[in-house]
Structure formats: structure tokens, C-alpha cells
Length: 610
Image 1 (cartoon, rainbow, N blue to C red):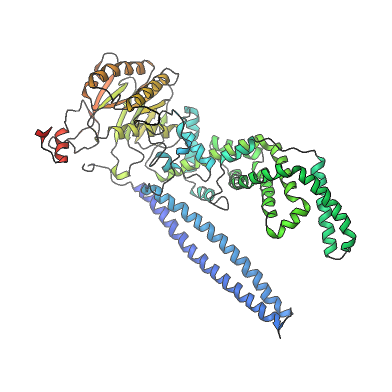
Image 2 (image 1 turned 120 degrees about the horizontal axis):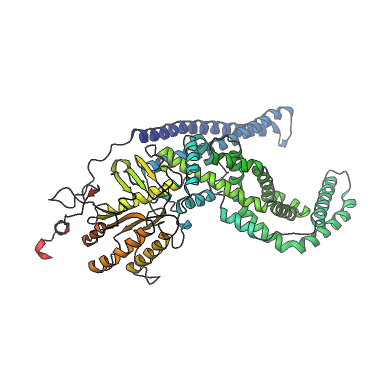
């Protein structure tokens, strides 16, 4: 198949984004090299200071700490501090480099690098998630998903799979317009958390919230705190020789006995919760830092202002910071040099009980904080898409009768220089298209382009078009169905079931936008013609508009039936001598070119061998 002709040249605006990312990478790589040198200098000074301290302190076979040893000791402290700071700075620069490298991968449509498919967010019996390549390999989700958190990725998937009403979609548009130019904010979001695996997984947090709160009588934590503090004070007094250990030993043993009795009663439940908290602790860091970052912003759009106000009014980051400190304490108690102290003071039990008290107080709030952050993260991911695709436009979302007017429509997942633009207009006249043409002519790609851009519009995102107006629709598609051996379904049965689901949606209050490829392809031409007419009439009677594609020319008669207001369009080659030389453009009328002879020539077979 020949490449498409007469395509648009690369966008200067898109090139500007790529140059911006590359210049930032060059700058960051320069900073990375400088930080590496500074880290090496700090490490050299540290080693030198250690050597100097050894030389200053060891003489005549014995260790002596003299006044001169203060200088290398101070050098050790300063160089160690500098080394740690340089390591932290290097880690941040590496993350920032990764942020712009992933941006370049998205601009290049490097699908091997864009490996996030979103298939874990798939819904059963969804009417377009795989047909329109919203989820899956090389999908819209793969291109959009630049979220920092798992909660944000889940919210992004929900935006794409659950079209919002027009009021909400307009509010999202305003928020994304404001966020689009804030590349620095997206960079800060990428830096959240100490490690990349800290992802704020909403399912993990909600599962933890769903478990019953571990409650004990108020006297138990008080008794543990008093006894643990007393044991610690007695041990310190004994080690500093304030009190002889023989005097404090009976007292310490009695307190330890009390702690052992209480600890034994709580042991199983505490151990089980400690295992859970090790996992939960990893998910809270990004959430706490993200909400703190959100609370520092001053936005103008109503949706973003609402997110900020909700976080500030509930002091979300402050309360989560307190929870993080408890998690930090739990992590520290497991270190070898603190394990004995933890055991003597029942620190693990006390910390778990403190976490449970926090959960009892903020159990309802935490779920709302996760949703709040997830939405902000998802909006920033869409804003990143808007920034990286400056040729896209925000569609006009109009109230009233069903209408879809898309001029210069392009497929969002195609490279800019290979994207053929089309005009699609569906309203009262015509209500639907019958799109004829042979395989490989571009019919399925056009259907997906219409559906994908509609999904983007309701998510609040810009779309690949020169001008766009659309009303509220319920998007329904039947494009990528196949046989299922496990479910015992043929392709024909799968198509029939999908059509039945679409027809049910057509009877609801919201009009349906139907996009059906090779309708009922598993039957003969006459049966297909008899079945498709009633399907189309049922869809239109429910207020639907849409496109049916087919290579069966018998179906084109449906568009001419009185009262249906249909339109016949086609996609075919302009070259009568080469019917496989497709230009991927929509043309009026019915496809008349046959590709059978050309296909036989492609296979090396003469026409008479049919």
C-alpha cells in the first residue's frame, strides 16, 4: 500500500514543544554533570578527612584524640553533608530528565516506551473502550497517562470511560486551559515521593480503610506509654550511672512483665496490621506531598479553585503529615540498632494503635482526599497532552439537539505528518452516514477518529480538529469485536449482542453517537440488508446519529430510504488503474472501485484463477 499523499507538513508549534523539551534536557544534563563532579569532590574530601582523622588520632600504636583531630572531624561532617545533598540533588535531576524524556517519547509516539495500557481499568460490557483504542496497546490512555500516581491513572481512565455532562466537561476545559502552560508544576508533580514505586494506589488505601478499626480500651495505650517511658528512663539512668542497675532492675522487670502481658494479648492483631501498614506507608507519601503542593497553588478556574479549597479547608496535607510521621516511626523501629529499644518500650504496638486512632478520626476524609488528589493528577496529565499538542483545539460543547460538526478532523494517535484530515457533520440532515469502500481504505480509522475525539472532548481535553462543535452524546461503538473461544461466542454473535446493547442505550435520555464498522459482517448480503434497515431505524427513532461502514454495497440503499435522512459517502482510490492506492479521504457517493483484481495481482495470481 502506498503512503498517503498530500499530507500536512509538520506543525511549527509541535516542533517548538519538542525543541523546548530538548533544550531543557540539555540544560539538565549539564547540571547533572556538574552535580556528579561536586559529589565526587565531596566524596574525595570525605575520604581525605577520614584519613586525616586517623593520622591525627593514632600515634605510637594507640588512639589519642587531640585538639588537632577536631579539624578533620569537622571536615568529615561537612563533606558528608555535602555528599548527601549532592546525592539528593542528583536524584531529583535524574527524575526531571526522565520527565522530559518521556515527553519526547510521547511526541515521537514511541509505543514501545509508552507501555502503560490501562487494561486494568477495563469495564465489563463497555461500549467503546477497546473498539476506539481508549485502552490497550498503542491506545489513547497510553498517550495521555503521565500521571504521578495510580489514583490519578485510575481517575484518568474514568474520565475517558465515563463521559461527563457538558457542564462538567466545560469546567474541565477551563481547568486544563489554565494548567496547560504550567510545565513547572508538572515537573514538581513528577518529583513527588522519594521513590518511583510510591504510587498512591487508591485500591490499596481503600482496602485499608475498609478494614475494621482496631480499638482497645483507652487505658491500654496510656499504660503502654507510661511503662515504656519508665523503662527507657530507667535504662538511661542506669547506663549514665545516675542509679545503680541493681536498684532499677526489679522495677524494669516488673514493667516489662506488664508490657509482655498486654503485648501478648494484642500480638496477633498488631502483627497483622504491621504487615498491612508497611504497604500502606508507601502509598501515602505522594498523596501527602501532592496535596501540600496543591494547597500552595492560586488558581483562577472554578474547578481547580474548588480542589484547592477542599484540601485547605480539611487541612488534608497537615493531617496526612502526621500519619506519615507515624509510618516513619514504624519503619525506624525495624532497624537493628533500634530493635531492642522498640521491644523494651512496645513502640510497635503503640505506633499501630496511634495509626488506628488516626484512621478512626479521618477514615471518611482520607477517601475524599484520595479522590481529590486523583482528579488533580488526571487534569494535569490531560494538560500535559494539551501542551504537547498545540495544534489541537478545545471543542465548543453545545446544548440542545444532537449535532456533531468536526472540521479538519484527525486521528489523535497518528503522527502529525501522516494524519489525513476529514470533515464530519451529523445532525438533523444528515442523521447518519453509510461509509462504503474496500478494506484498507481507512473506514475504521475514520470511525475511531470520530469516537476518540468525542471521548477527549467530554474528558475536557483538546481534540485533533480545526473547528469542532458537539452536543451531549453517549458514545457507542462496534469496531473491534472478534470470536471468543472461551466465551463460546462467534464474531457474529458478539456483534449482535453489541448492537443490542447500543439499541438499549438509544432509548435513554442522552442521544447516542453510534460508530459501527462492517455491521453484521458474519451473514450474507441479503440477510444483512434485511437486518440492518430495522437496526438503523430503531437507532434513529431514539435520536441517535452516527456512521455505519461497509464494503457491502447492498447496504448503501438504507441511506436513501425516505425519512431516514442518511448520506452515502465512500473512501476509495482516485487512481482507476490502482484501486489499492488509497488517499484515505472521504468522498461523496458510493464506492464503485473493485479491489479484487489488484489484490490478486498483489498475490501474484492472474485474474482468471479466481
